[in-house]
Length: 563
Image (tube, rainbow, N blue to C red; front, side):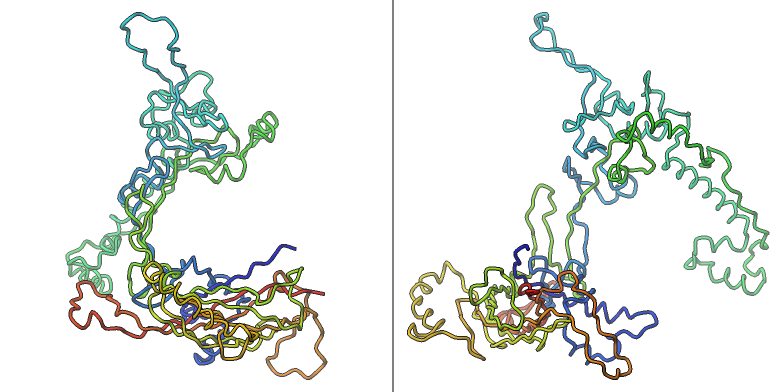
């Protein structure tokens, strides 16, 4: 069995807002019964909904204006920079609507191995060791040009795609694939997929033709509808909108509009120029090709998904893949719209302008056994085990911590949990460089404060902390693991609404002892400046306010032995 590492996951408060604002359609949700019961009900880390609300502290952000934790699901994201990951060229947001979300420069990926493709010439350049006339200029490399992969040795000539010049590869591929200037690039023995027919047969070209055709049909039908002409684009804020609406319901012609004419029937596309194509149900050519090329000539699922356009089934139908654009995103608090994460706008700069992570604003929680664990590393049922919970304060203010846990863990196997010191304070995090001398000087005194006199045996006591440091505190938590035996309860009359007991076998990770713990933090910090241009001068600069933060967390202790 793999070794178990204790963990601590924190629940984002946004899950409460989501559950209260989204009740079940017909059934009455438990959160809609009574808000007081919802607040008093203990958090169940094994519930299916908990999988989407628990995060390690490294994944969480913190809003210093709201004094709340923010997770990746509840923050509001904004695009800061759009760039190509291959050439690192920044792309404007306006060009995304016209050019799409892919790089329009000579940046392509191999359709076989997804490696980068390089532009190479089919004709090899002359070797410099050959004799040449004195003063003669070197012969430039001429085309045709291809895209080649240096990893799997695939090149675009395998599908019959060659280029006249090494620049503007994206536009040349668009012309080849969508039927523009097709004969200019075709060569003898070309097996390009766009070779058949003078008209483009790609899905993009057919969609453009269908869109143009039906736009014309829609305009013709709207023009002939008379009184409904103003309603085509819902122009209710135009000057004559009110008169047109009144004319529709009154049946009069007060607005001077033409009488309503009978609308013409919109016809369907019936030619290839309009985007219509008859489905070819004859698969005999594909079957012959499959018999000839075998399994190696077909396309894998990943290769087909990475293509820009769907429909590729064989290897010679794969096209070079333009690089997908990447983004740098800034994140805002969904409540106060305060920026909590903002990267540098420059593509080559990996630093952050603003980065309010939860690890620098709330205490971190670590857990370890008080006594050395057994050789197997498993918890024995019904045997008390003590663990040390260490809270480390990252801020420069003293924090008061209040803990609360249910007497037994939720689930089929209820283990007993006892927090010996549920309320304590953590000292402020002073600068190590400034106070290093004081820390070393008071080392003996701190040691006596931590563990008491050396002659006495240090034991865990209720209401007292186990150990204290400069900015951290350790307390003792005692657990009594429950046995993992599934027994049928004795027969007794069932009450109304009582559910049947679960007698199924042990489920996955059900032997993990997981403690739900409610953490409440209180401290005094500087007044947050949430308004831009605030004129806070004089005494108000030194004013401080009381701040609070409360959240649930799930602490994984270990696995319970099934013996």
